[in-house]
Image 1: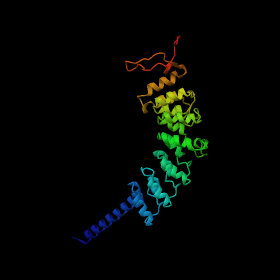
Image 2: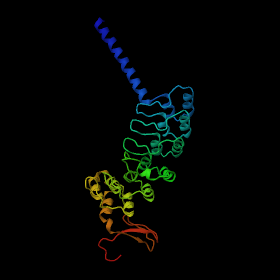
Image 3: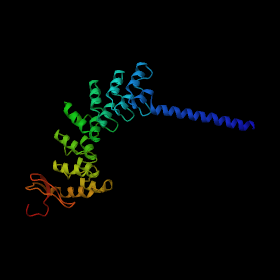
Length: 299
């Protein structure tokens, strides 16, 4: 073998080694420390051992800017959270998206973990880079028990509605967009403005544009103004038509509800009825039934 070929092969081997080393370093940065992995496995004993031996820094970040405390919010172990906080974890650390442990606790519906963070004075009204607070995420992801807990425990509900100038999100709009009717109801019961608008429009725009027929029906029942327009000048009906492709199954019902909303009245059933066909209602005596009286002379 010539000297040139030997040199080429040697250079290739060195290049391969450097590539492997680089890949290993990237993996370590992405996956974090041994503490991150212990927490992701839900192993509180290993996490405590690492912290007691000072093998790792408790607030070391991984490739996403997340500390071990962030990942503990995704585990069903309050012991893990206790170990990390006892080890000196910063309860207000945020990742590259501005997400804190409080954000993740609310997103995952982990009430015990959230309570522990509050005991250690974590910021419950911090905002991520999208302008969302922890409460906004609880509403967005349908964590009803977490929402109810926060509505009961927060003294100043105005802070949940508006936490500051950087607070761009609306809990009501997020709940409506994702079809969480119960949460929409709870927010309205606690003073949220049903007719509040953002650039995308009202909560009715969010529900109608995302195919949430049940939320549309509830908001109309709650008295929302169906004539409100968004930044593009579209009403909820026009916005629903424009976004019909998102949920073609419910768009017909939503369009009917929005077109006929001025003609709807509630009637009390005077006797039981059991529908036979797929398009017939079933109800008991005394039930309130939403009826369209368009074109009816007698009701």
